[in-house]
Image (cartoon, rainbow, N blue to C red):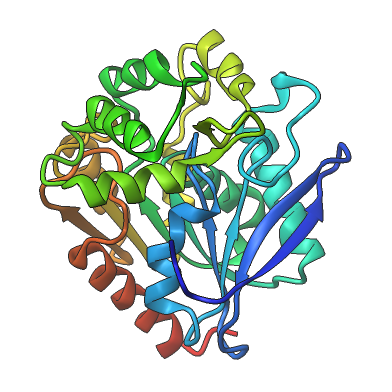
Length: 292
């Protein structure tokens, strides 16, 4: 686990949920980095980003409803991108964040793209981690096969082995220590003493009932996002973001840098040197522009 110091913060959703974020302190003359996690992920997923950039940058790691320390929704129908966008917009307002550098992994990237449509003036720049306006059916079906199943394990080593069985093709170079680290980001010790995934299993219900995560053309959202400095990351082995879609994303504007992270699939963990170096380049653009 990360040793980087943070405080816990919370905000309220429009329908009365208390949602949680980690707040790593940093310079106040720069927009904070707002990290928005993927479908089954939580604030711990962004420990590598905090370790690399906190101090020079304030890093806020949000937990979407139904994940981590955020409240679970009373109605599983609210586990949809439009609601996540509304929740993040409420965080921007309640935490007084005039501008942020949004960093969205997978689902968090979809939320970031959608934010650009109604809250584009709040985004100084963005990092989109292994997601795009078009999502490959193969990868989506793989996710649907495991999300919401609610497995639990007696020890962390059992959990790590299960992670390897599920995701060995995504991180083919991972060793035991890597799988243990990933398991501890995704899971917690439950009230029963067993190790369980750290999300509400009901987040899967809307996804399993729909043909795709969003039912409209996402390209206009990507085009709008690309009006500012954007870094698009793609895992070389990704089955969710195709190389063809990735190339089209890179052509949206001259403000987009597209970087392939070698040797990993969906999604890069953001521990990879190539990913961290690319994020540092984007942040240099932001600080060089004097964004406040």
